[in-house]
Length: 585
Image (cartoon, rainbow, N blue to C red; front, side, top):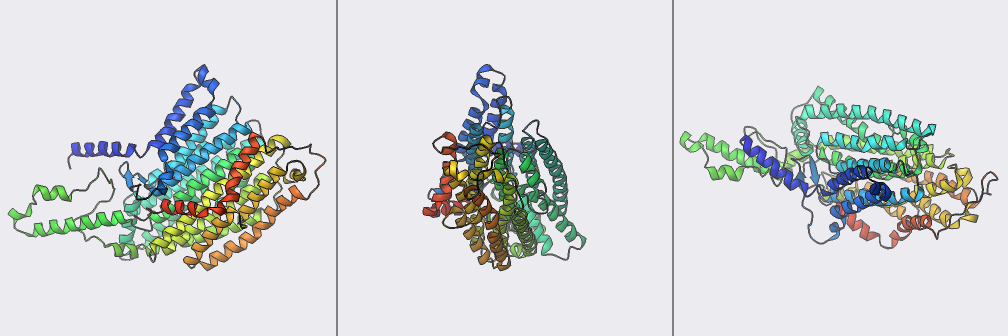
């Protein structure tokens, strides 16, 4: 291929990719518009909230996650920007989930008034910039994009954690968060360099093919140690975003120092993006997609044909022009980083699947152990907490462990039953959607009560049932849903995850999850007991939280799915199944 043809193909690929990249471009334009509008009086009068919310709504329109519910295959799996990103049903759903949360989050921030007029422009700019990085995380198809996306999502979060100026705890939270994040980012980048160096590529499907060739060949010796070390280092970066043990130490302090609104952002959006990225990486290095297998089969056929022609007499060795054109890869419509050597035999699909068995087993065991330790530590550490934000921080850690479990189950099922593996990942998607409403509702209530009580201590919640019964009922329903008590929505999510563990025969992990669910009942029930049964403290003034207000309407809005999803949970389940339908294609 000539240099001119290479440039033409690059421009054609970029033009094709842009139409699938409109939600991200919309957020970029919104950020620029917010920054420029601050230079004019009309822009300052309108406010950054209007620009941020409008941009999120437009981006959600372009993301169009509702099209997954339409009949037929409306989403075509496509690699974007020469294989750096991937557009499929998984990307469509998670982009929609993040943008929907962004809209709810902007409304919450406006109602609580946490960014004052002076800081609102910076606040919403940082939030949109972080969401932009998260949207790249869920569609990452390249190791360098993974690192850049994680950093794009993390750096604005460091600033948001220290948003409350003049508070030592907020400054301490931002400092701890940024130092810890910088250290894990360096470790992750070094791990990426090791994996890319051994496999010769940073494109995830190509990395899977190279791993299959390496693991199915002669013993690797020291190279196997390097690969395992690289995988562990990449896991460090992902565990930091998930607040998974042992890289959770930043989470309680950051949640205590930051505002409840920022905590909602970190506990929902950041966790959703990190879990989606975990699925991308775990499946990306443990399975060769069907499209890649087809491309390799075509390349193998072309190599075989060219080899036969090379063995013929010289005057017959040169293939006709039409044969070369038909054998050329279609880089414009399906860009890929996979290259083949015609002189080497190409592995069959079954050989690639068998070759990656060792890689899948290693990653599945690593994720399973980390999930078990994370949920156990999070639940046990929450017992002695007196601050509601620290308690919810440890709750977030515990739920990160629960939501990592179906990823391990999917890797176990990948070779024997790919459809069951897809179903296991769909249980994660189902639980994440429910988790959005549970955690957003919990932190919204904490933020609204903070504005009235000027306290975030659990003891100051005593006797709230007597003056604000509506908010106590909503908060109690959310807490019991976090436990997983039927008929609340949290029960549906946990039951689906437990089913995936049974199908993968991970019975020991199921026992750990069940015991931790019982343990968590204590500290969630303790908060409900304080609000309902304890006497009002003398140090606290009267608290009136009317449900017939904008704040009350918001709390009712985010609590309603927790209460009502039990009546039509199959619709959400079908949506989750559709979101994962193209993961293995």
